[in-house]
Image (cartoon, rainbow, N blue to C red; front, side, top):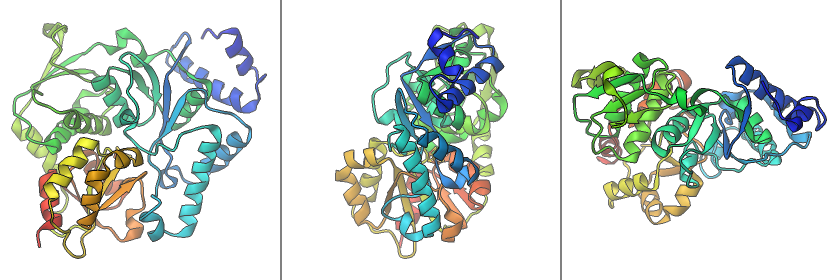
Length: 391
Ligand code: F3S
């Protein structure tokens, strides 16, 4: 791999061990994927911030690297961690919360912003063609496919290293030749809501492996629908992007796959492991809700009240919550909780006694049985809200 003079000096340790380690992580990764150089990035996004998923082992490393004085050199954001300030931190043990605040402090010391969201693309407008080093898989697919930015699916350590160095190895979807579609997917049924878009992603992720698809039949899909599609596509597969009805593509040269109504139905059925109408938790906001989704939820709630002994969480970033204050006040008056900085999957729902989760997110329904030890019901937003409000 070719390094500039300055990169070599960092690699050789002239700027301290912490910068050197970051550079070594990037160079090793680049060598693994035959990159010939590092390229500058406009932002880095680190996942694995929740103490629940991180565990104890990496905390010492974070402490050491933060205390070594390294600083982020590009805009650097963080995925959700395990608690919020207002609701969950009062329900979870002080030991857990203390560890979580400590982790955040180390990231802050390095210059990471307290974004604590898996939808960093709502924080700031990104340019088409911007090179990024993002580690949240749902955000990676959204950035590449909806925004037109360029990012590989980073791991937590490589995104951290990229944030410090301000560069990433030039391989994968940073290169035009690796952004070529290989499969033409024809969706032969009309998808009626966000949950069916999510189910499509789950279905395709399993069969596409890492082959980039052009997906036909997504007419009328909103950005929120595409967000669900991308999040679940990345949950079951390694694809980092998709195209929609791209007219420039020579479709005759592509492998072809058809998706029928029964495929979507089966994917949804497989993600529903309980038929309970009294779930311990109804969870909306995976990936974190957009302003549009919060408005939609507020409109749907009207003046109704959440029925007794029902937990309804709407998860979003504190940034979106502030922007949506007109709607969030109304939602909170209903008895629902708007929870920021975390989500049901990366917090300790099991410690809160939650054994069944109803959600409109295929990604959550996919992960909750293992990460939350919970039974799941996957059903559209409208039905989730009906369950929360019907008396
Ligand atoms: Fe975000 Fe949590 Fe889903 S981090 S993508 S809301 S699992």
